[in-house]
Image (cartoon, rainbow, N blue to C red; front, side):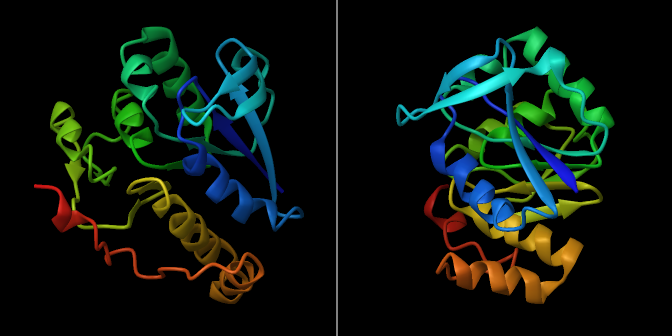
Length: 199
């Protein structure tokens, strides 16, 4: 059993979070989704979905996957030193790290993506230029570099979550989950039809 430690902030993208959480939540014997934030309490997505969170400072998990979503709120959080320091600390103790959309930009601020391959939201890909020490892969649905998984924008997180499950538990389990949620899984992490839409 691994905890999925999802770090939320006001203005996170709803599907960034709940696409992957739907996938992981289909395997309750393997994954335990938990939601945390800097202040605790209710955090609201860009689409006004409220989520009750626990305080990051009270996190006690010892075996966990750190999950960092993106969203319009990332533009504020990236400049908050306390938030980035908390991410750095959590990431340093995580068994795996997964990011969706501009969550990879937030992770890049910790320095833990330096020298690694990663991707991000294609509409906001110009933002990756602020982290030149990362090898950014524009044409990728998701990228795996060691224990770090980064995905493209929004719905790509669901493909990545299934890819993670395939890596950890086998392709048959990932296929089973995709059928249960009636989702057509893009299994090829390099197949990215959106990369060419944004210069």
